Image (cartoon, one colour):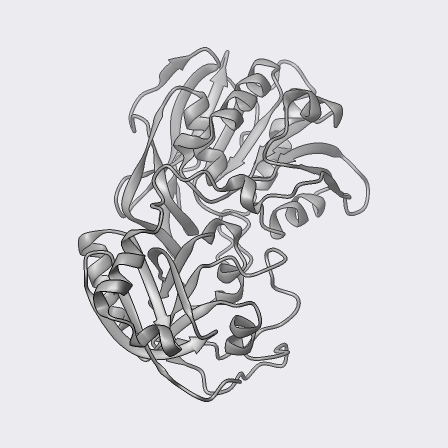
Length: 388
């Protein structure tokens, strides 16, 4: 573990500056400042491709106590642009730990900062909204304040950013079903997490993971029983190619399930707009109501954009009647959509993460709902995807 703590500085685009100590790699980084309310699961957060180009502020005061292992990564690398913690653990304490969190941040070149008031920083972001930020340590921290601020404001904004192709696979691959293969799913990778195809495979699904640029022909070549769009980073307003692909999937009558970015793209394909949230939802403790069952679930979130769809009633589209199926109880943000044609469910999506590896697992049943949707598609005359 690194023990030398050189001075470091965090500079927000509105000019607010906080001082702290270097954490992870020494140097400089810029990105969008967002905060995560999760008390655990930092390894899954750091390796989630949806955090590409974001500097994550942890609201939990003590981070790193379980170290870093070789089993919990959600992808092949850390994706965050920077990391902000209040009190880093002095040493890891877990039988699963292979090394410290700070050693892993340093090894993967992630610039961070610690020993600063993350509560004050989080309150600032809640009041002013997510914004660009820079972390500077070592020689970089000694540069003039005006120069550091200029580097922050020169960084690209998240609005208008097309990032899915930067984090997605470039080659198709297959995750085989565990045991008997019951279904085949074409999963479009927009920043997919490893847990997603794993949870499908455990349910007898053979998952064909396709690049973000996949065409309808490539989807059809997998002979899918269903199509899945994953989570991912960036502004959904830029995902026109994926929205047109999804429109083709819906016209073909192939059952659809989407998570996070996949929910926003479904909204876009159906004709709804999307918008940037003031500071987004990030963490593992967000209450959501599933209007299909009437149950309230505690769920994991990581999204800075949302679908602009009416919360009440249904909307007629080319693809069927659309209703909002899930709502966040904190702020009434749309957290899920359902599409029905002739009273039959043909597509659904959620904005949050039922596959969250660090938990909670209240919404894991949605993968079973997808299976029921595919089963009912094989049996005309049945009702799609209902779960008690």
